[in-house]
Image (cartoon, rainbow, N blue to C red):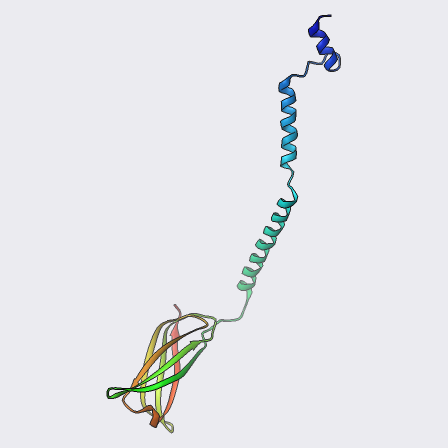
Length: 160
C-alpha cells in the first residue's frame, strides 16, 4: 500500500473517504449554530417580562373598552375676591373640573340675587378646561356684590 491509501484506511472505516479539513470545519460550524440557537436564561426572562407587559396592556385596553361608566365633566365654581375697578366691581373666581372628561367652551354664570329675585347676571367663557384641573377668571358687575347674594354656577360646556 502506498502512503495515500494507508492514510485513508487509518482515518475511518474501510471504503470511507478521508475527512478533509473542510468537513471538520462544517461540523464545527453546525455545532456552533446549535449552541447559539438555544435561548439562554436572560432571553427567557426578557421574553417572559415582555409577554406579561403586553398582556397587561391588552387587559387594560379591554377593561377601558368594556367599562360602562359614562365619564362627564364635574364643575365647581368658587369666589376668590371682589374689588372695585372704576365704576364696576370685579369678582375673581376659580372654576374646577373635578370630572374625568376635558371640557371646552365652559360657560360660568354669576348672578347677584336679592331673595329669589335676580338683580344682575354676568358670564365668562373658558375655551378649554382639562379634567382634574382649574382655571381662574373674573366677572364684572355694575352693582356691588357685597350688597347681594352671589351665585356662581357652571352652566354648560361642549366636547372638545
